[in-house]
Length: 449
Image 1 (cartoon, rainbow, N blue to C red):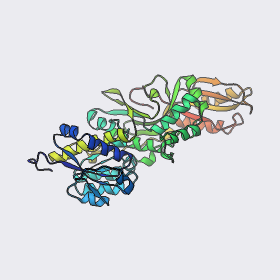
Image 2: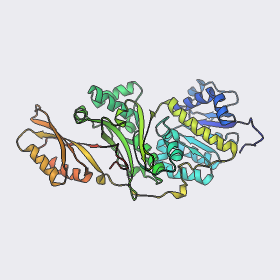
Image 3: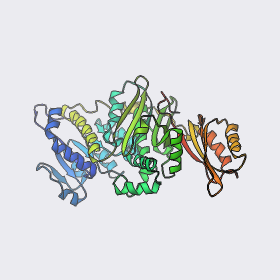
Image 4: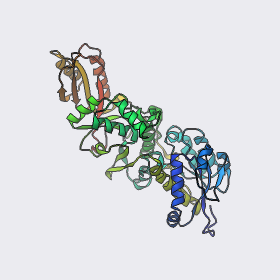
């Protein structure tokens, strides 16, 4: 705590990691120092930076009072630094930075979603144990203030479910494929050229990044620890333009969703491509933008929308956390609001439902033999397992003698669908494995499934 008589004494911030987000935060801090001081009522100063790449440091203009640390441990242990901002990414040394800083009595801010999703129990527990603040708004949704909304604004309401487009790369790819009829690999290469996708896009296109984010969101929304390894995850590599085209004929738009539903005694948390009604709010979120729709028991539906990535949008979320933590440091009132919005000791662990137990409508595309009896066979297998067909589209013959037969179903369990397809895909009536895409009605109150 600062001496209350030192009205002009600054809270000194140390930044570890000066990549895209780190430099964005640095620019924001230096550019808006006057505005930040007005809003805080005291100065927030750049006390030091630590960056392993010397070339990055050469390109920066730092104030004379800023210390350049060669090793992150020097900053963490320096008593002049009151608040540590970790922006190095990855699991190590990021995990050690946060734990050592909190052990030294410093509040910390991070944007590291993978770290929190994988080691959240340890990190949130350390924040509670050491009585410091932990800010991580930038870990989900870039500049979208979803975590603060859950932690503070909606703290008195029970959150029933969340559904979000929380990866801009995947959303950009699906948007371009849908609008232009392009193949997945073509759009992925385009996204990489424009800087919307990494050279190794695995985390984005395989749903792993979205799984990290929905794990954090579900933990905060439902007050239950979430094991990342138990979340069913499907990406978008397998998506074909033909399915986007059929989806439009049915009135659907395809999005990669992170979904979390509170069923009371259990949780339904998953990531996969989903068809949404074309008149839903989430279906209109295109390009690299993110959006998260939630439903509160008292509030009802709420949608938060904005830029989910990028240096400047993410830096604004980091700055919001830094200012909140700085108030706690200056006034000697840290950890007034727990990092997760509820006491760490008050968490209630609940099991995750297996994917086989979810209840949804389905889009099924069969490549069926163009011969009498095929459609009745498909309908019969589905009907025998309690699956009711809602709509059917059949197109003309292709050169291989098979035709696409597309079916949308009424609500059924995943296990019913998989049991049916195990029989159908092994039969002579189809020429390739059936394409399955879930249909989500995100406008439903209370539960998605």
